[in-house]
Length: 309
Ligand code: 13P
Ligand code: SF4
Image: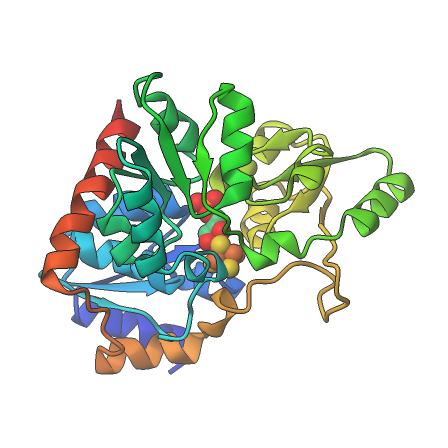
């Protein structure tokens, strides 16, 4: 039996669902029940009737699914699949920062750990950050954490000042502006599209800025164009499936690597073998202490409610 057949069989017999992010390896995206961005994945996790959620993504995503489903088993193929952005916001230091700025509404990007969510007022993702920030009364000061690049982008879009936490995603910050501009001069008919976790100088070169799912929709709607895609390269798999005839180039990374693109080493820790094994043994389990989980659920639910409006 092939490994994919084994996964299908285990999934059915255990009533499990596989949720995968667009940055996952192609073979994992192909076996998943749902592939999406952080918002879509949280929405799916909130509504699933499955008994087990296998999260093919990184730890903060699986943790969010667990907070939404405290009674269900949530498993992550590799427990080391972390996130540099989440790591850039240690809960104890962030808590002191929040205490030093009373009367602020605390909006946290979903790429943070459960303890940080537990001291937040509203969670957001890159597809709803604008809507979430605009849902807060104009007179109320805002702390936005942990991604300073997304925060700056939202400040520019809304014209609203926010207090930014100094965090960032190493993968998006590894995109090389020099190599990107060289690519544009070599291929002047290509348009750049970028994820808002990218640095300001990258975003300035982009014709379109959006979350992973928004970038895919944009490419679908403009399928006569050619694109340089400034985000983690895993997204090209789904994009290329949606638009067979469109030519796509991943944005180049500062360091030369095997794919000449930007790859998230955390996302790539998950493999088909690990996915099969975690379904088989139902480990590693995602655990969130009860008190943290209850507190973190409030800002996550607020986000889901505002997103529906
Ligand atoms: P989205 O898929 O929500 O755009 O998030 C990108 C990301 O960096 C996830 O780690
Ligand atoms: Fe975290 Fe960046 Fe990897 Fe997304 S791409 S999981 S933000 S390190």
